[in-house]
Length: 228
Image 1: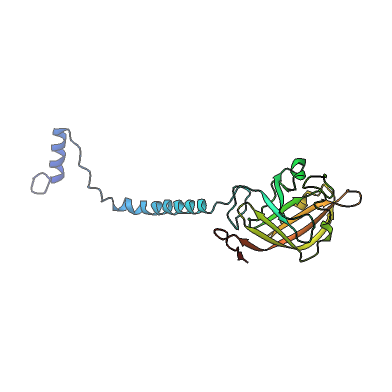
Image 2: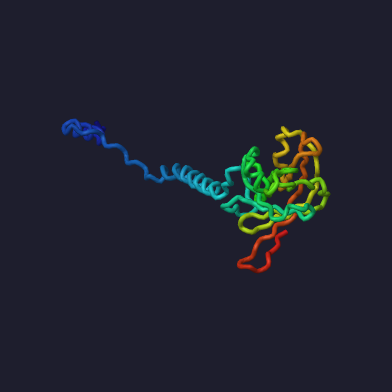
């Protein structure tokens, strides 16, 4: 009640609501602006996460975990040329398991799961017979591997016609079970040529060469373009 005996506004509202079964009206809520202010940081986070995911997908590397220096050809067959060696001219190199004798008979063998020349970091591991089999490409194919010296050239060509020119930098003899010889060298693209030692074939002679330049074929039959 007010001082003058009249009902206050609050009393009148209480009486009216009791009579109608209503409830006290709730105060008006503030605009949704505050909720948007809380949601904006979350929205920004989601947009950033989406953009990062897209970027990672575009940077995805091949299955072997390494980044490519050139587009990998569909056919992984290679040809090997070593000018100082008598029988190594456009020699077929087959990608196969180390014990695949049929691949060795056909030329030389790229040990499966080792690197390829178009990769940034790789050990392209190639094995060939010292004696081999008469009337096959394997016969005496790596007989003179021991003649290679520092600076000699080793050339690989992929199925697309791109040539990879390597220069010899190392030579070593290891036991036949030295698996670490097939592992890549950090930050380097090398090729390893392996054959048996003489006279007893008990160990393995390995000559290593490092990529010096890449020669890419131009369109058509014109001269090749060289890329250092």
